[in-house]
Length: 88
Image 1 (cartoon, rainbow, N blue to C red):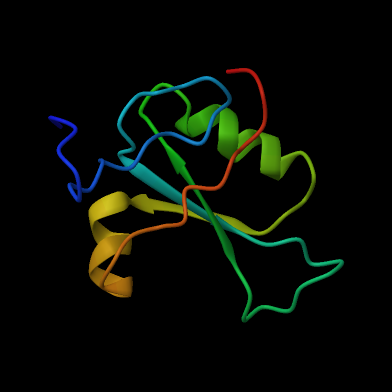
Image 2 (cartoon, rainbow, N blue to C red; image 1 turned 135 degrees about the horizontal axis):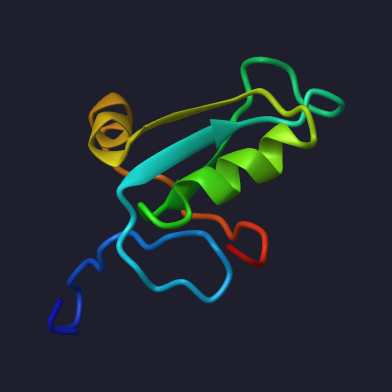
């Protein structure tokens, strides 16, 4: 990453204040408000993968974790990289 205009930045971990490159995609949904067809995606580095997945699991949210490269191949682009919880 050199910061040139128009150059895409690599996906980053969704854990608060983490700037590490994402290696994992955590696909999840809140079953109280979304049906099975709607899933959100958090990105995770190796260090925060378990923390983010456990955070969702404690809330009984259905989730699965896949390598980011697999998600990119499925979607043809990348994940949204939405912000995850604080901590880790």
